[in-house]
Image 1 (tube, rainbow, N blue to C red):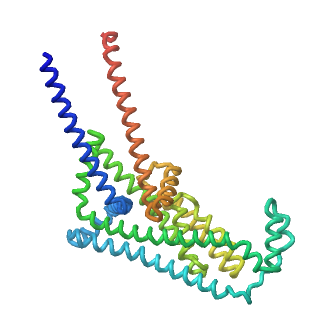
Image 2: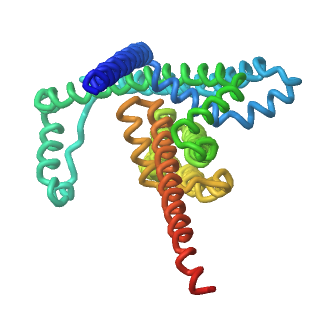
Image 3: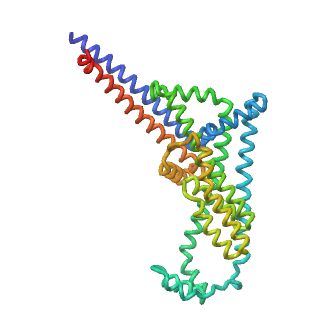
Length: 375
């Protein structure tokens, strides 16, 4: 008996060591893969999200081209890249032109700061400090600039870093679009693989949760990012027609705010005040009407684009887009809202399914107790 027990212990230890070695090698392989793919994780996630969102137009374009799927993917990616790069070039040109105009007008001989009105001193909390600084600048601008130099340097470095991050984010967004184009022709294989993985993770509910994730992605893309793009484009066109300096920059800011579920009027209202200050009343009134229509357009666009809609709360979308933007720049702005929406949707489906299962189990357990009474 003792020898038999000892042999079983040795066999168990040998099997345990084999399992530990295999798991260690698997974990090491996963670590190496993640380390290699780390720079591409966000573009890969973005590519999958974009591929899911482009499923319907890709199907229609592929049918129009006689079933040539690769050609449809190339054409669709080319159109999207043009739609992305042309506004980016226009934004860069607008920024360079605005900066050039400012630098041309920034001459020590021509700068003259007018004295502040007496009413500035009556502003609450900051009135006296603003009045004193403004008055000092009107008398001796150079001394004020010397005092503000450290703060201006920090602000300038922050602006340069932000512009650099936006540029890198744009490159990553282009990479994500190219990845999406490569995934579109193999979408059926990808969907089958996703359902198998879902089955491994969630059992019988795996395919259902996989389809739910796809529907959630399409809903957020249509109803959140689609509405934000439409609003930013309409606002940018209005500002370009009105001759607002840096119109591309304000349109980009509107896009970011709209994805975060914040109203575009946060940007458009100061632009309206600017129009009334520097332009004719007619132009300012027309731009105000256009800006109000753009600001209220989400009340019409969201029911149209989210008719089958997303039940994701606004707070979840805000946290996802803001957190994604902070973590990964402009690409994270889009991906963050989608990823957090997916997580919320899957979690709520799991909770609802678990509660439903408990209710079914409790009702099934209650039936045998009532059957004797009924007999």
